[in-house]
Image (cartoon, rainbow, N blue to C red):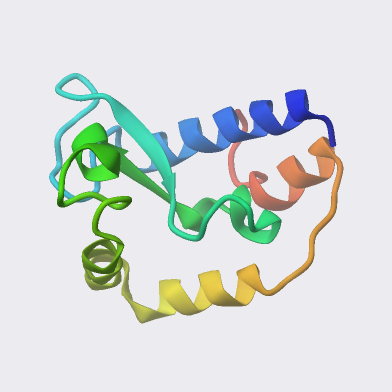
Length: 120
């Protein structure tokens, strides 16, 4: 897969994550009109099995993504705890199961496999 296609998939994934969250930060509830909203990977994007897996996406305001002490990148233990409280153990187990799979696909296959729930 080319870097260009990876970038396209990342943008599509992020847009879908934000839409699924109602264009609101999943931690504080600020909407996209009040803040810059980001799509965050719970399991890092280096893991291709979960990189575009929609349940791995979390919509976060810039503060909760990277800019404050109470952010996913600055305080990962706190963030993991918050997300487990919000989404539950079943969600975490699904992510762990998916993260252990190997998936090497074309852009079309990735879209069909992971993003087939909705049209972009």
